[in-house]
Amino acid sequence: MKVFISSLISDFGPFRDAARRAVTTLRHEALMAEDFEARPTSPQIACLQGVRDADIVVLILGERYGPVQPTGLSATHEEYREARGTKHVLAFVQQGVTPEPRQAELITEVQDWEAGLFRGGFADAEDLHAGIIRALHDVALTDAVGTADPEELTRRALALIPPENRNMSSTGATVDIAIAMGPRQQVLRPVEIESRDLSEHVLQSVLFGPDRLFSPSLGNKVEIADGALVIRQDRGAFLRLSEDGSILILQPLDEPSTGRGWDMGGHMVIIQEIVQQRIATALGFATTLIDHIDATQRLTHAAVAVRIAGAEYRAWRTRSQNDASPDSVTIGMGERNHQPVVKVQRRAALRVDRSRLIEDLLVPLRRQFPAG
Image (cartoon, rainbow, N blue to C red; front, side):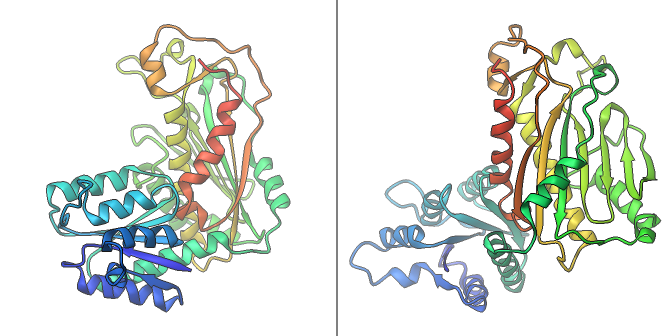
């Protein structure tokens, strides 16, 4: 496997060396700018060709933007643009420095782009070395062949989705995400499912973690139900964690209206970006929770099932479409055959290929609803 390492050469000697060591430790071929300096074409054209030939691009972003090329972009910026959308891009941002204005813009551009991008930070060369090894390992796992049965995983994921509640006045519409892990095995003993340490850790994560699912302003009910840890809130927010690592997450589809609670009359559309955000948050939370309960990675595969419930009369819009015509909505005909969309992936894809997974779930969901 070829790995292109993109960085600002003049500033990043120790970091580039650490990156090359990480790549070669895993027996991949490391490609860097200095490897192309003897080519008959210009070094930057040769580097861009190196990006095209590579399987993975490691992007190291520090304080300086670097010299500007004829395109108006730095060499690293050009290499990132060349790789974006066609390669796995593993981006590492140096911590504890103040980026130059144009470098800050590049970092923002990288962090705002979600498709197929892994992001990490690093404090020193050894930190970067360890981060690159972990990220490359995760990418390799997304393509590896495992022993889990995709059909069995799919059946279990679908079985996790509860019957649809048609009483919209009680909970409103929800985005339901079920994640079945495989190969099927017990990863939490009954005493561990019931432990206070686990319930407190999960509750802290759902309320205050980076991918929080629940509102800190609402009350929570924590219980053990049918051998699983269950946490629920008003408005349909719900989490269930089972002994085999399976997770069910229900999130309210609608944002609360300002000032006067929930305005159901204003919720006659499904906003695509909200659905996308709900799925992304659920997958981010689930990935962290699975890593917590199965640190040795006995679970190698995941089947993700997503359904929108309680929204059979709604139309589907992007946020910009809704802003352009907020008072005119095409009402759906009450179609109730909204089946869950299922995707089976290697576990590592939940982290390194999450955006592609979200797209593969979101597009079939959109097709189940009329355009608004």
